[in-house]
Image (cartoon, rainbow, N blue to C red):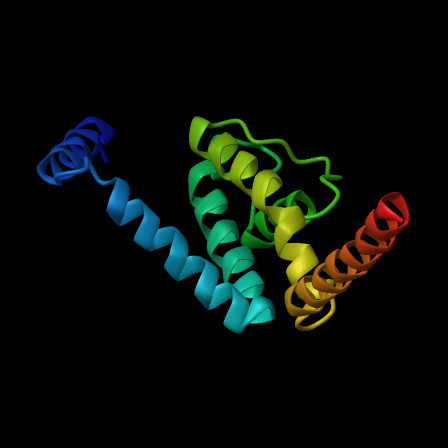
Length: 146
C-alpha cells in the first residue's frame, strides 16, 4: 500500500473543510472522551486489542521480536502502563503507535483503576475548599475592620 496517495487524500479532505478539519478533530476527541467516560474498561480493552493488531501489522516481518499477535499484545499492554518490555518498535508506524500508547496510557489506567465518579467528587471537594476559604476570608476581613 502506498502512503503518499492516502496523505494527499487526507490533506485534500482537510482543505475542503472551512476550518481545515479542526472542527472534525474536536468532534472526534469529544466523542472518544464520552465513550471512554461511559465505559472505561471496555474502551481500554478495545484500545489494547486494536493497537495490538495495528502494531502486529506494522512490525510483522520487520521486527524479529514480533512473531505473533501475542508479542504485539505484550508490547501494547506494557506501553499503556510501565513501558517494561524487551520489544521495541522498529518501523515508523510501530513507533507512532508506541508514542500514542505511552501518551494516553496513564490517563486510561487512571480512568479504569480510579474511583467511579471521581471527577464529580473532586468538583464537590473543590467547592467545599472554596467555601471554607471564603468563610476564613470573611472572618479575617471582620477582624481587620473591627
